[in-house]
Image: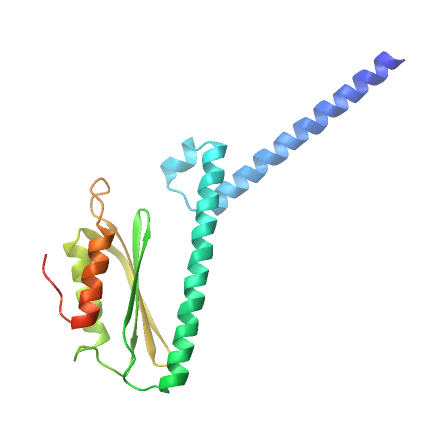
Length: 184
């Protein structure tokens, strides 16, 4: 009798383990579907690599949320403190997201930085990105409470060469200070 019951227990353990593996496999497929990956990465990525990539992605998103909260607070303070006055400084931020580069900048809609409109500034930023070897994927803006938020997404023309994020940051900060685009 013990022999029969032990085989039943053994079969139950195997079934439980099989169901656990199936569930874990499904969860990893679900995780893979949630994390942005390029097509080459999705095919040959091990479970460990997937978990590491997901962890990095989640940390990046948490940092992005924190930056956005700070930006929101800064905007709220500038709107409350200046009550729409024209002395709001432009803010430029560059984010390197691996294969893409994101440039965020904010301008006071009613003011002109160094005598230039935000559209001129947008054009200069796009020129700097192109000069540094970046291809603009998208550019958009929206106006919130008198502050215009611009977002530019770009990537390197040649992925093997890439772009020098530090140099782009320097040139954009110089543009923000002087209002003039520096040459190579």
